Length: 225
Length: 385
Image (tube, rainbow over all chains, first blue to last red; front, side, top):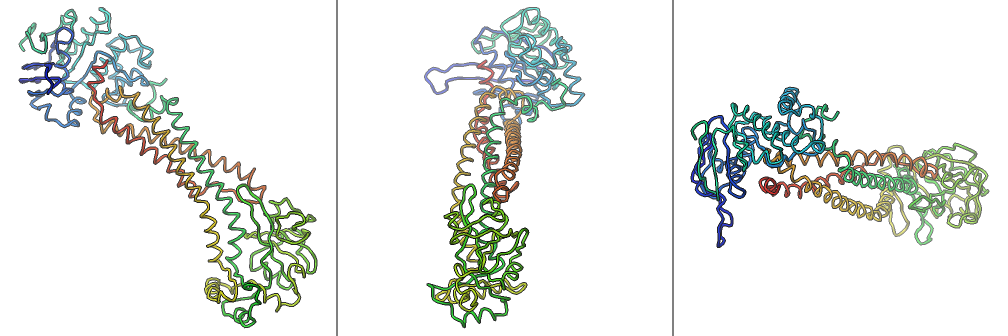
């Protein structure tokens, strides 16, 4: 369970004009489902995502994950939690250029075992890029790279997947395929997808609408938040 | 295919293997510095070995006494010394003669000892000298048996001549015919006894009153040296193993410039390789930030980069030592041996100084990289893109 209580994220503290990236956020996300976080550019949706993931420390308020206050974790413990329980898909793929596709996927588990490789290949096959396993990132198209980044986010069987504008670099057809793939995966994890494109959230269970750092509405499409 | 290699994705070896071009400059710099220092110390060892053979080794088996300010040595002193329980025999000679040799980095003289026929066999046995070619010089002639390495250095063969008429730097008056070649650790050559270089040589008492060598009984060298050292220095000039070692060490002091060169080389390496490495890691900030975002803590990331730096330096060091040994082998065969000098494939000091290059480079590479990793902010990296 991921719980956000009275959370604020303020920039320019101490200056005359303070900027609220997030203002008084309260949100509880639980169960294996897909949550969409929608909002225009600069609305604070990515900030919310990274605060939930523990990558950004809020100015005030608490973020708890399975009863653990993320702000109280040491950087080492927070990193361990990310490696074990979280998966990340960023707007850009951030693939490591000297590694092959397969090695990039295996990076979070840093494994060279046959079991790990088979699992990675299986993910790549399901993302329809299995044949590219031995290619380097520069040999791939933008869409293919993003699929590799998705496989990398799933290799450690995360309990929560944080996806930030994951389809921004994809054409509509590819975006649909990727979202369908994630839809299959939501049986196993809580998936939080930040986007400004409502068309990719047709499989979402709930949609959190955010504007100017404030949650405006939470639309529960298939369940209760 | 690269994907079939069985290496963990974050293995430092994988990075090294996949980025050969990028790390080539670092490896190359370490290799050259290690090889340079290794060769430098090998070069110096060859020079020092020749100097030691010319000036120190003789005194490991004998001592010498000569008159002070040309005052004849007291008969009583000569008698005391020759009868001392540690002394086996004294041999009349003159210490003023030497044969010039030249090697890269040094020019010097090796001792040439004029000996009466009666003393030659004893002297050669006591000094471990063997005649390997030709004959020994005869009394009353102008002949010389030259040490084989000095002969090599001067390209002398039997029938050639030496002396200050031939080479103005030889400390032997006139011309002496080479009649034999000698082999020994010390670079000692033997001259004929004649009235020119050993005046009154037929009268041992007179020759002994000017200068003589002292040889110990078996196993008594240290005791003999201790006894000789106590002889009144206002009466005679004494040379023992200790005094010759001290003179040699004074010469070694001049080689301190080597240590300065070594330190400068190491500093240049540290700055060159350290800054190259730092630049490489600045270019890999995105990769390091990603790993931190995915959940690798900064200690994991630093340890991985440390291993990469160690691998780069270890490869550079191994290649440097390899190159150094090959160059030393080449130097031995082509440079030193034709000049009668020993070449050294391995020198402990060369190895120790050479290993300082990778050690300091690792240390001074990892300090700024550690600072870089500590300042990593994955979120900045993500948002920047």
